[in-house]
Length: 271
Ligand SMILES: [Mn+2]
Image 1 (cartoon, protein in one colour):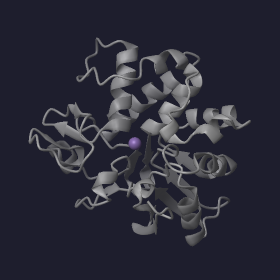
Image 2 (spheres, protein in one colour):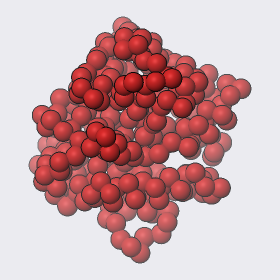
Image 3 (cartoon, helix red, strand yellow):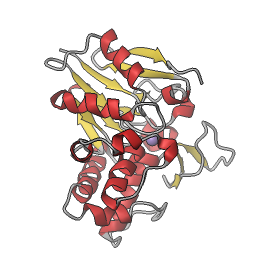
């Protein structure tokens, strides 16, 4: 029995399959935590979802921005962006089943055994782990409700920048989703800079979220994906950056949780 976490798949099925084979992943004994962005941009998003669906009792996913976008397009009846290469998935007869499977997944997971918090983009520096899980449950209740369609129409906007009790449910939903799925740089108040996707900020008022003083003093482990430009290089032992940019020609990273052991598979595409 072993527990693993894996970085962003983004449709890179062949590397995903290679890593599962490498560790002899056994769905009847082992469990796989995925930090999200299962789909989009890579060559075979449909195969990634098919595989996860087939072993759904043994996998947990914290949804990423691309996953939520896919679910939103399905509910809002919007075509996929051609550059996401999602046509085979959109044309699949099992599309509704796969979307429903994704929609049941959370935004954040707490693993008591490993003292570990997992989400796609990380932890809002203004939240404790406990508060983050509470906020995640609220946003999940929005996108898993009968009103999901309504919330998806309100998902795309960088605002509000600040949490206030007076925010509407739609604003709270958007604020929470932005932190869990899109965060990279924050300012000293923990406000998001959603424009910069590199690994450095010219504007020194913004720092990587995991360098915020509130995060530096945490004792918990935090595992996240989303930020390929980091190339997995984060110098804090309790922070695990698993998106090593497989879809961009980098590698896919799988971590064995009990040993903090990393396995990587270089991209199979020649790009
Ligand atoms: Mn992402």
